[in-house]
Amino acid sequence: MVPEKEIEELVGYEFPGGEYTIEHWENFLLTECTGSELLPDAQVHPVALFHVPILGSHTSIAEMFALGQAESDFSIGIESYDWELFSPLFEDIRYRITASVTEADRRSYENGKVYDRIAFQFKVARPDGELAARCTITWHYRRSLTNWSDST
Image (cartoon, rainbow, N blue to C red; front, side):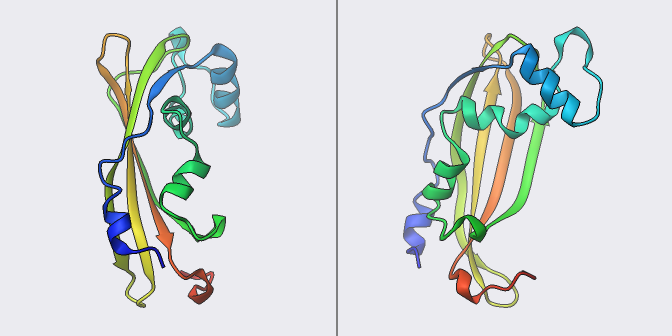
């Protein structure tokens, strides 16, 4: 099992960060898959917050799995995706994205099974620096998957 100290030391880890521009075709496809109509004035559908912060911070889900030392693709459990939208996102705007690990600790469920809880926070800023959105993704990295059942 990953040493608990290694997990706790992830707090403060920063991803490279970067920029991301949501193009019209991307907004169209994302909006279409939700069954919604395009928003007025080139506003971006909030579903873009599933991937824009991750890509814009120059990371990937695979890298996030590796950072927490996931035992397998099946050892990750989703606790929450918390999206805070402070202003609408728009097509063709270059957003600056920063990201870091804000929480990381070892826990156990009532049944005694161990997991590491890691929270990743992504900030999406407009070109003027104003915060447009903040996304916090919290995952459980279940340890010793061989002792887990599908019901947990």
